[in-house]
Structures are given as C-alpha cells and as structure tokens.
Length: 231
Image 1 (tube, one colour):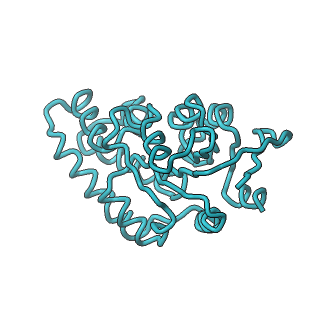
Image 2 (spheres, rainbow, N blue to C red):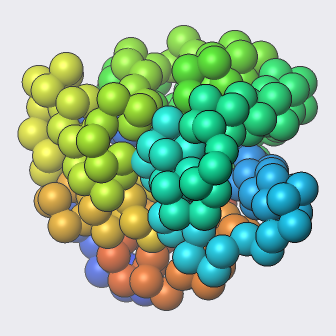
C-alpha cells in the first residue's frame, strides 16, 4: 500500500511504498514511560540516592538485563544484577498486567493497518514477562506477526539490529519499512539507518522534542492526527 507522509511542517508530500510497520511499545503504543520514571526514582531513593542525571539515556533502550548491568557497574557495584532486575520486575509487573492503557486511538490505527494487509512487528526494550501480559490484556497481540525485544541485541536500540531482524523476517527493505518510536535514541538510530520514521509525542520525551522532529520523516502529537491524514 502507498502511504503518503508529510514532512514535519506538513507542507510537502512524498509517497512511500510501505510493506512493513514496526511499532515501539512503551511511550509509543502505551502510556508507560511515567511508570518507569517513577520506578527509577523510588529505586534510587530506597538507596538514599537521586537518579543520576544521565541515567535515563543510558538505560532506556538496552533491555532489562543490560540496564541492570549498567546500574550495577556504574552506580551500585555492591549489588547483584539479578536482584536489581527482580526488584524492577516486582515494581512494574502488576501495572502492565492490570492497568497501563493504550494511547488514544492506538488500536484503531493497528486495525486500520491490519485491514490494509500490511504486516506489523513490535520492537520493544521491555522484557517478555512484562510485555506479554500487557499485550494480552489490551487485546492487541494478534496484530503483530513478530514481537522482538532488545534483550538479545548487543546494543539495544542504539543499533538498528532489532529493526533489521524484523525486515529480515518479513523479507522487506529498510526503505519499505515504517517505524514509529517516541524517544530520541531509537528515532536517530532508525533515521540514520535509512528507515522511514514517525516520531510519536510522549510526555516523557518533551525535552528532546525538537531533535525528535528533526530526525523524523513525520512527527505526530497523537494517533488521531495520523489516522485523519491516512483516511
């Protein structure tokens, strides 16, 4: 299907033959980034510490295992990585299982793409134990022909590896793939690798909004905006 995208100022138009759409989960499809900000705050407060100033950028896109290793090596050398991860899991699992919501009109967008017979993949920095219960509760697992997480990727979303695995699975090219992400690191990664990128507004990424806009083919405030354009 031909999806027409507009540039960031909504002034110019260009056509892309999109054969695969890859969604991020946290902050893109679901409202969860504020949960992780609160977990980080409570985690360090329990140890009498403030959140290190660059901590979010260091751990946001690398998966729980790598994030635990970074946390131990840089900030908590006397702690155990498995214990750190278990604490995070305990703090987050119930929220994903019980109440974290989809972003407004997210399911409508998934259904729209599904009806165009365009395959979709999910590429997340979360762990399987957490995202599985969330996808099941929200009733959106069936839209994705492939779900990947960065825990098996060396550099998380600092590298396009996770996206490249998805296009290999579906046998499509980077330029035929559309990626939706909310945070600056994966947006830059995907953009520099030659993917089509839609930046999605999230309240936890406002400090990087200009950079997100500059590195996206299109930046949207919400899915309603994108759906109205598609339709």
